[in-house]
Image (tube, rainbow, N blue to C red; front, side):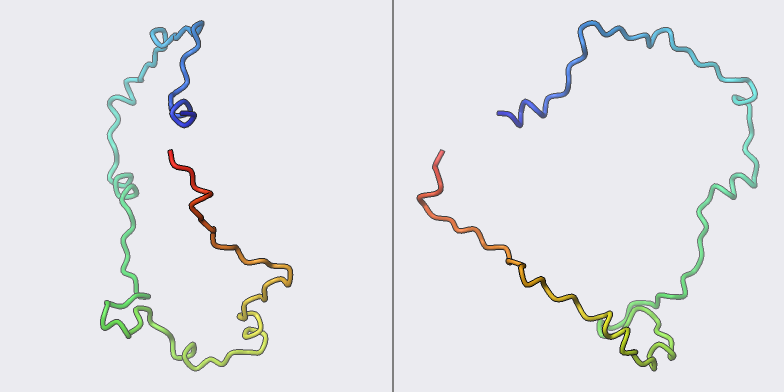
Amino acid sequence: MRLLQLSNPKLIHPDFQSNRESVESTVSFASKTAQISQRLTRLSLPRLKESSTCCKLGRPEESIWTVSRAAQKALVSARVEMLSTPKQLSKDYIPPREPEWSRENVRST
């Protein structure tokens, strides 16, 4: 019931007076007759470029990304390996429990 009440839009205040009839905007003659230049048209288009970082899809076991030889031959330092290990959970951490449902706790409507 409360959800239905909250879903209704707010009503307009009874003393509200709209003045939309008096709002006017004038567009200048120059704005009405303006011509767009070729340069502006070119600048408005998205820039398209070929991506060289991604290869065509092949077999699932093949990589989509190209990996440089230097990256393939790189050796990990002790510092990088230490930073890559996940943090341990706090000793006070209590994992979330699965909810326990019983027929006594469930009321039928």
